[in-house]
Image (tube, rainbow, N blue to C red; front, side):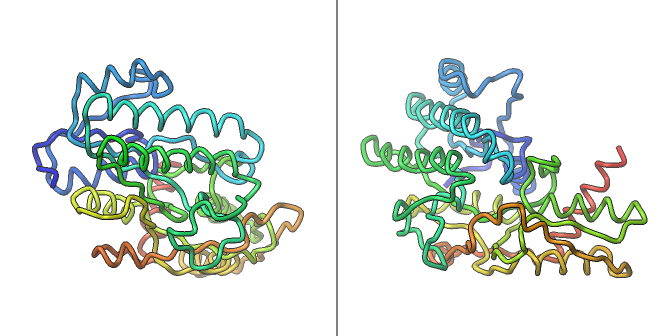
Amino acid sequence: MIKKTDKIFVAGHKGLVGSAILRKLKRSGYKNIITVEKKKLNLISQEKVIAFLKKKKPKCIFLAAAKVGGIYSNKKFKANYIYENLMIQTNIIHGAYKANIKNLIFLGSSCIYPKLCKQPIKEKYFLSGKLEETNDAYAVAKIAGVKMCQSYNFQYKTNYKCLMPTNTFGPNDNYHKLNSHFIPALLRKIYQIEISNKNIIKIWGDGSPRREIIYSEDIADACIFFMNKKTKHSLINIGTGKDFRIKDYVSLFLKILLPKRKIKIIYDKSKPNGTPRKVLDVSLAKKYGWTAKTSIKEAVFKTYDEYKYRQKQ
């Protein structure tokens, strides 16, 4: 168990999940949270990371720092994704070991599983098949992080846990026109419709791929839950266990956010669909006592409100 006065380091505290973890920790009464700005600590420098961790000596680490992006960015900048993610996670995991920090949560991604994986995806399917080509570099980096945590647990008796979230969205997401994931991309397009007289929305792919989504606050809740939970497993899926087609999300989001507007949806079939289906088996997380709690409607409203607020600043 992590005490409310223990030092806790949140790596990547300004990102989507890292900022959610930081908010959740503060609301839960944790008093000694460590964060550091990029300009003050380059996580790609092993020497600096190890020195920082030895100096601060946190009781536990939430490793949410990563280079992330959507299909376009992952496909075009593979070298950046594999290099930066390998360096960041390797430096923090190895640095934790060197600083004798026994407790760490590594946040991976459901893309570690094979492209044509049997559904729903169980943790035991890890390393059982070929990856999705558009984000294989990022996936390989995350796979290396999982194996590194498992290897350190085996050899050094550490308590490094790997949580694999499904598609995550929420406040403080990345809405870049080319680098965002499908939920923030969709919300950005809906906002552009709201502030204009347009009545057309264009979506990448044919809308048939099935995706599971989860609110970032639920991921943060899972991180703190499993940091304080003794488990036999080092790899645990985090999701809702429910998936829908991209076209279902488009229709639902438009209905929730622009209920009085009639919008024509156009699917750009020249763009890649990505993995045809991806839904996690979350029975292991449920067995340990954790489930996602936020409804899609509530999560969409909160995320969209925060995005609109940022646009007006």
